[in-house]
Image 1 (cartoon, rainbow, N blue to C red):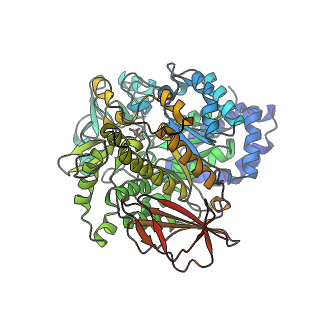
Image 2 (image 1 turned 30 degrees about the horizontal axis):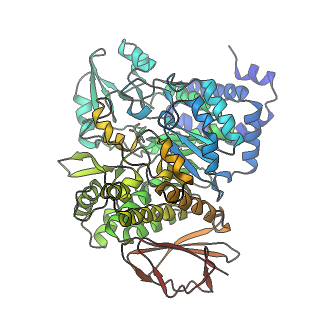
Length: 620
Ligand code: GLC
């Protein structure tokens, strides 16, 4: 068997050694603090050395380039998209053939939904992983994945893949061995002989799917034990108190990195550490583990960065960036601004959104966000209740308004969508639907109203425009660029019917995509609108060092955002979230402004916006 020493003797390990030397003390200290297990630490270090030795020269070159340019993912031209391989193209090989379509949109970042081996048909959209080292045969092979990342890299597109850290499928080999009675593998999970401890956990741990998967434990008949299953019964939570779990998961993570994956989306990361008597979210040990992973990546494959899936309030988010000296994630989803955008659109009031943007901005310069409107998941109405109360908004009533509004059940609602995981005990619920359908496109088409359609498209582009202005970079949900509608047909498929997130997980409509170049079609209108946004983001004010802030517009229906460079160049964006013309002014901005698109002079102390209009103003 190879040891660290034999591996090192065979190759020039100078680069690896130097990187290891930079973090070794901290890595050792954190690992030993968590596990007090030197053998496990040695195994981890060996896995790192092996992964480095196996890394291709091409990827090592990329590592060096990224080390010299660590802010590469903060450039203004970053533009992302997320999609399911099968829904978009069928499989990985076919997806590679669709590259021209992605290049046409000047994408620089592609997030493919989970594609590792999974059980069929119940796999939570791929989030139940059966083998972290193998692509699902229905989608292709590891070689197909490596070939795709290579092609994408040549096109300037970084591939992001999920790393589902919190759990495995109940059909994963570790779970199968646990079921067969192997205590070593039972220790990879949280298994209990009776309800004593599970009942204690249930007292403090909230439920993720109260409706579709109630409770946090599942009885396993083969094992004759209860097993912790925070998400679905077929997703077994891993036990990170066992160092072998962290070591093995890290090994798989490095395998993906060596296949050319450049961004790892660490799924459900706040949940990975469990502690009786707590809510089992965001515990300090989670941060120790993320920090360890960051150091492992920086040592073995510094081209690879971490995106955290942290669906939490801003005060929790900050910790996932770590500190400037001891960073954790490179970027996080901006979940709360996404939710607040939808809330502002329905309520025609931007105050909560503005407060949320201010709270995120206050987190400091190291924070960087992936901004988005829709993804494969639902919209969970996690608004800041303190701010709501301060503004005189009843949090519970507002939440009920929102999920009924986006279900289309509220008087005057333009939206078509569905409620997700309604909990009768708390009257809590989330919402599902595509961007276009939630913005009114579906209803307008049903009504055959051209005027309603135009309004819906303006809403859709307003939402994209605001989102593209925020700190971080924008990520589209595949299909949004052509106004893909809800797919109600999922209700007729028994394998999909139970999960209303399938409403917006639909097959990509290539016929509609073909209309993107036909003037007069809604696809063309959206396509051009998004084109204009990409052009906007080429403005120097979207550079990584630009200063970003919200700005008072003296109008609760209008969001004001400002980006400024040290040179003084200032870009102001104003966004009307209402169906009426609005008057606004931006005081104390100083200087003369012009409309960035038309070049016409604009008086920032006296501006009008049409319904759902946005304008970009730049100083001269
Ligand atoms: C993440 C995913 C979601 C999945 C869950 C469990 O939140 O986005 O789709 O259900 O993790 O893995």
